[in-house]
Image (tube, rainbow, N blue to C red; front, side):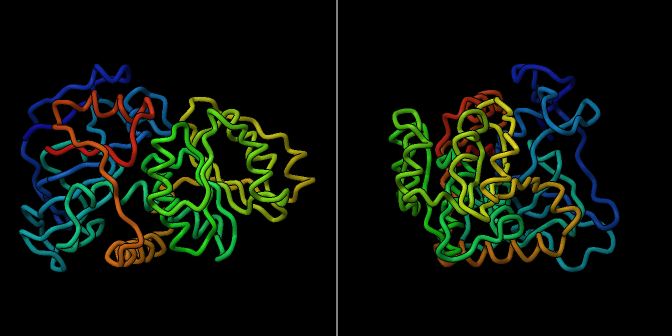
Length: 324
């Protein structure tokens, strides 16, 4: 089979499509024929050695995939060969085939295409965990989503609406804002043409924002910190701008808000029952039409560099998917 290999940390151009041995399912494992794999911002950081974890090289990147079970190892009785499934894995999804612990597989309803399923886990599950477990978002609260047309930002817009919030979307272009609006955003701010701090103050009539889903960092984070409501929750999700901000701690003191970190990967390991319950709720929302994965573009494995570059340069509206 073929897989993308990161032989050493470095530029995206160093990634290579290589022949690998056919994977074999051990006890409790399954081999998946991968039909689609999601491309995420952290994947690009990981292969460059810029992410929180640094796996031993060489390795195959990729954290989410959807496909068909090709074979099952000893002791796996709750699944069957030929079944449609999707999954998250810390690594190994940028490949034609994937061997994985069978307990990590989620049955995939026929109504959900492989390409959308492959984009559903990381982005939507991160947003879901952030808004449900970390922010405890309540109906009627105001939610601000920065980078609201990217994969996880757009997911946060949809899930915020599903949870009953008033959603404000902040994006860098009118095209992106139109997408956020089409997916349920109540208010939209172009922070390249409007002052984010002043516009937020006007939209909330000086009260501030209850929850911020903050993916951008830099000056955007600073503007959010100055527009928090009393008992607000400022969620630290990522730093797509490349600038990791510093918080003036006195703002949290005088405004009475909380800074809350969101690291979905660790959540899945430390709270597996909550993760499983979240995924069932997400699937129910998907089938009810409350959430949906917008696929921006698909690429073959051989074009992984182009796929990651598009994501890293923030030119994506929705999700980029690899189709092995």
